[in-house]
Image (cartoon, rainbow, N blue to C red; front, side):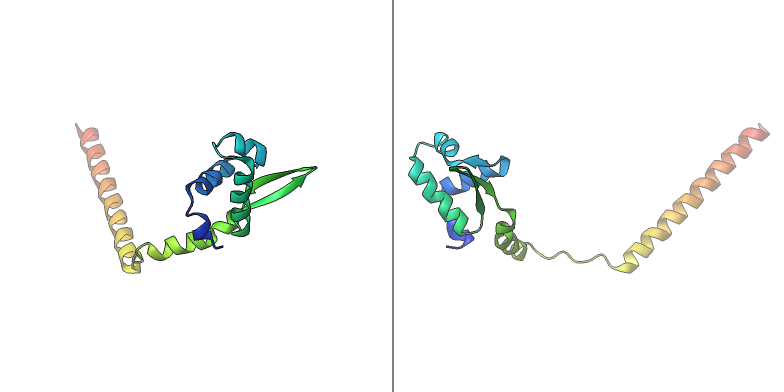
Length: 121
């Protein structure tokens, strides 16, 4: 099962959101949903098979956590949908640099002229 099939179910999407906050045991996750513990376990197996979560054994329990690397196919797909932004041409930055220098020079000239007027008054 791929990432998109795994994310097609709302319970699995909710489980991912929950696991993004902190790792959890199956029993803790099952307590948060109106479905059985075996059903939660099945959803977690599907998410694990898709590479979205991983299970770490702690004694007799398994703690599930989000596997951020598993979201790469989704991220790549969404990047393809994002319209490409044109790069800023170098000459546009040159023009900006010229305008900043000109504005700074004009302000200095205005400030020194104002100071000269105050000294002669």
